Image 1: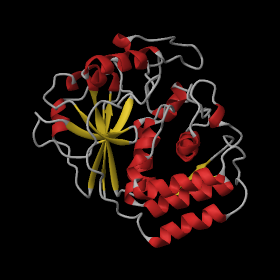
Image 2: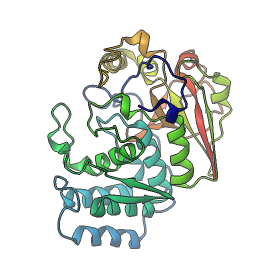
Image 3: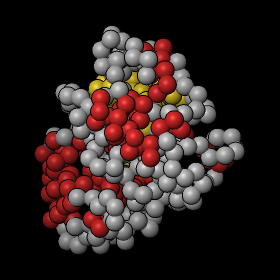
Image 4: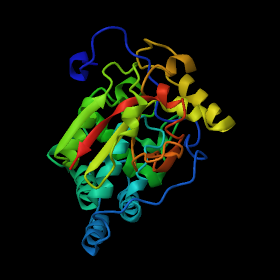
Length: 323
């Protein structure tokens, strides 16, 4: 990995925890889902016609192992639930967070990105180009440890391609860990040049091991024009959710094996030192005794209240976008 690109000081690699659990989605029982956010674009008949036209085309584009029918069917589902984009077992919480925001704000643009990427290997994401760049021959349906279901092949294609475009060492598989990391600089570029926010401010800590003040979290705005994306340690937050949460957190902290074997497996203590997950904040914190509302793993979720001491360990700032 090119240290200069990340903006991180050189030295020993930081421990890292994957963005998914080994098994079902780690947040399955975390909290009740919140109401879906309003969709700016996505319900028009013109978009439905685009999806139908795409489905009627022949062939699998540049993806021999991704049936067109599965991609078109998933587009139709996401048109009604654009917030449902899912990373599944892939360690790409950054791209997932960004595509969630993109699809809920500009679903037609999301459709154009998907169809262009599928048919030609290149899709338009604002002023950015997302490229498949060698991922086309993979078979996510047959991944050894964590095969993707047919219903989520679109999600894999888009999220893996976005991560690959920013880091050509990313191999597109669930086993990938270090090269799957999304840095704050990636988030800034995607929010500004991809989604089109007029200004994006990196308010994360610079080392990924020094926590940000919880007061910073409480002061974040969430409006039609303001969108923070939190940088957090999800293992610590999971540990607050009882026995199931602790089991999921343990799996998170023990499952990472770097591709080069530099760090080996890390335990919960090591996992607590770093930020390992991106989540868009869905509502401002007006009462720090109530759950913090975020989006993660394909749905709206509730984290512990901001007055919970766990945030002092689990919060590493945010990238803040403004329309």
